[in-house]
Image 1 (cartoon, rainbow, N blue to C red):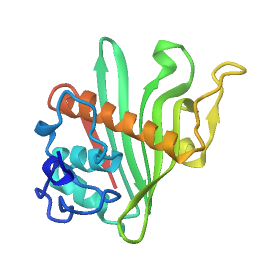
Image 2 (image 1 turned 90 degrees about the vertical axis):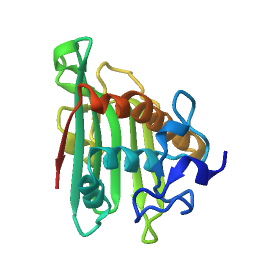
Image 3 (image 1 turned 135 degrees about the vertical axis):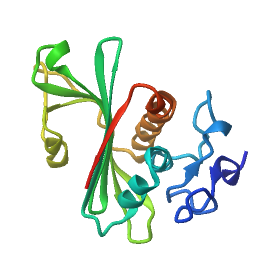
Image 4 (image 1 turned 120 degrees about the horizontal axis):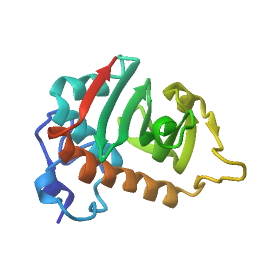
Length: 196
C-alpha cells in the first residue's frame, strides 16, 4: 500500500502527496486493526484527530500566527481517568497521554505513558526532538514545556532515548495509541476541550 493509498485530500492544506515529514489526513478505514504503516507518522495521526474534532480545530492548530493551541481529550474508563494532550506553542508541539495519579496513587503527579515533543520547521515539515515513556510531572501541563519532571520514587528511571530511531519508535507508539484507542473513543465518552 503506497502513501497516497492511506492518506486523503479531505483537508486541502494537507495534500495526500506531501512529503512524509509533513502532516496528512489518514483514511482511517484503510488501516484499522493493524500496526501503523511506516509512512504514517505521529503528525498524521494528530492532524487526523484534530480534523475529526472539527475543521476549525485543525485550522487553528496549523495556523502558526496563533501562538498557542491546546486540545485536551478526557475520558474515564473502568474508573480510571485518562487524558491526551496535543499542544502547540509557536513551532513546537507536545503530544502525550497521561493519567492523573492523585486519585489512583494519591500522588500529586501526572504519569505520562508516552510523551513526544516535535518541532515544525519553516517548510511545514515536522521532526521529533524528544520522546519518553513513563515519565512523571507535577500536575501542571506547563511543567512539561519547561522540562520539569519528577521521580515518583527514588531511583525510578523513565525511558528517554537519545537516538533518532528510538525517538521515532516512541512517537509511532503514541500515534498508534491515539489512533486505535482514542480516535474511535472520541465518538463515545471523550470530552474534548480546545483553547487558543
